[in-house]
Amino acid sequence: MSLKAQKRMAAEILKCGENRVYCNPYLIDEIKMAITREDIRNLIKEGIIQKKYKKGNSKYRKNIRHERKKKGRARGLGKRKGTKGARTPKKKAWMKRIRPQRRELKKLRDRKLITTATYRKLYKNAKGGMFNSVAQMNRHIKEKDLIKRGRS
Image (cartoon, rainbow, N blue to C red):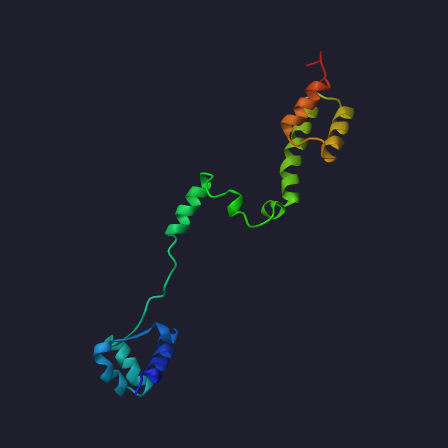
């Protein structure tokens, strides 16, 4: 005779799965005698039948991997799964590039370092993707000598 029925009843009472029901192996005869829910409840109270702890996943290895990734390890081509566009979507990359450029242009215009006409022209250039970064845009402004002189 197995403990299938007892385990099932105990699982329902303890509100867990049958795999998490622990029956004391030394008192199996006593458990076999329990045929009603009340008997099972008494055995649980006595500690003969218990509920096992849930198994968890340790974060130890994950934390070590995370620390290494923060340092730049394990990020090579062999570890990449998504495409370049999946890892950083084109739109996000664009936003990351264009917003600082526009901020810089506004700053130059508000300080009266460039004219409104120049601002519009550079704004359109930036929108067209002419500059890859703020530094490149500033180099372009310097090379084309677009900064006003004289007035401060």
